[in-house]
Image (tube, rainbow, N blue to C red; front, side, top):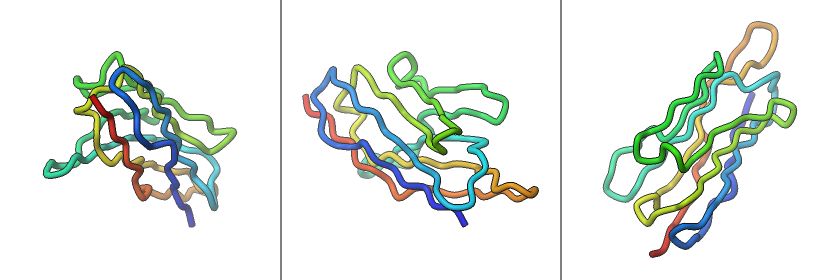
Length: 120
């Protein structure tokens, strides 16, 4: 099977940067779709950025111009570069991916989440 593990979260000051990583391990041929979500306390989980099968990238309005999503299939890893962080970016960030396992099989799933806290 496949497992997604996020890392890179932590504490940052407003205006600072963090880079989140999401490593797919197991029976992975390639990451087909990579998405990043976040959930702040008391709020619903929201889509932050997505990198589609065809390479199209979409961002939530709240992060557009500050965050950058990417993937490196040689490393089976997706990234979310977060710049110009704001206190309202504080949340648990989750990656979600569709993974090609080869031989016509795919896997869909979530990582466990990583906390991002931005201080003012």
